Image (cartoon, rainbow, N blue to C red):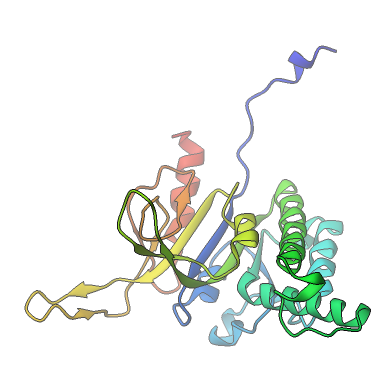
Length: 257
C-alpha cells in the first residue's frame, strides 16, 4: 500500500479551548453550558451553580496525581458517556503541581525549600518540572479529544507587562501561569478566549462603568492573549446561562467556512 493512499480530508472534531478571566465572572458556569460536561476540579466553583443545574464532577483534587487518575479513568471508559471534559481551573492545578514538586524535593533532600524557584537545585529546574506535569495533562486531554470529547480548560487572569523594542510598554491580560507552562494551554488549541465585563466610559468624567454584561474575546488582539480557528473576528456577547460560542463553531464546521 502506497502512503499516498492514506491521504484524505481531515474530519471535524470537537474543540480544545482555554477560557480565562477575572474571578467571579462565571467561568465555571460558562463551562457548564458545554455539551454534557464532566468537571475535573482543582477548586470548588460548582457551588455557584444551582443544584438542579449542576453538572457531574469528580471529587476535588487534593494532590497532583489525582488529576492524572481522573483523566485516565475517562480515557479507559471512552469518555463514560460525557461529551465535554472541563478542568476548573488550570491555575489552581498549577499551584498543586508546584507544591508537589516542592514536597518531592523536601522528601529526597536534606536541605529543605519552600519555593518552586529553589526546588530541584534551582536555576529553573522546579519550573521545568511543573511544565512537564502540565504537558502530561495536555497529552491526556488530547487523547480524550481524539476519542470525541470537547476539552475546556478554565483559568484565572493575570496582567503581564510587555516591553518590546519597537513600541511603548503596555499591559496585556494573560493566563495566570508561568510562561514555561502556559503554552500547553495556548498553543495548538482551537480557541483561547478572554472572558471580561463590558466596560463603558463616561465621556464627561472619564470613569468606567459596567452593568454585568459579559463578552468573550477570542480574536487576536494586543490587549489580551486570545485566538481562534473559526474566523471569529468580533467580541461575542455571553448572556448568563447561554453559550453562543457553540452555535458559531457548529456553523463554521457544518458550512466549511
